[in-house]
Image: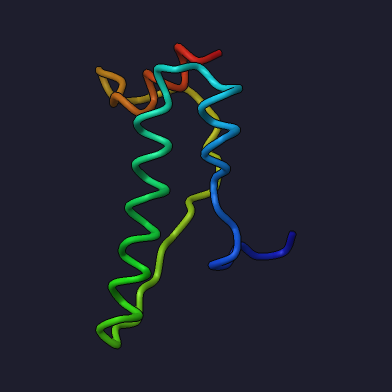
Length: 76
């Protein structure tokens, strides 16, 4: 896949059936929120842009892991 677009979504069924339950709320809420924002933009004539950051590899520099990073660490 060269580029992600509006047709590419997290598979909520896969998340709930195959991944660590601790990550479910975060992953599912991000999917539903993004869909709602795109729908709102369409209904109100707004352009909506989302950015999917690339994978950053290396040591973590902050003194405390954000919850999203901690959830990923615990899911492994």
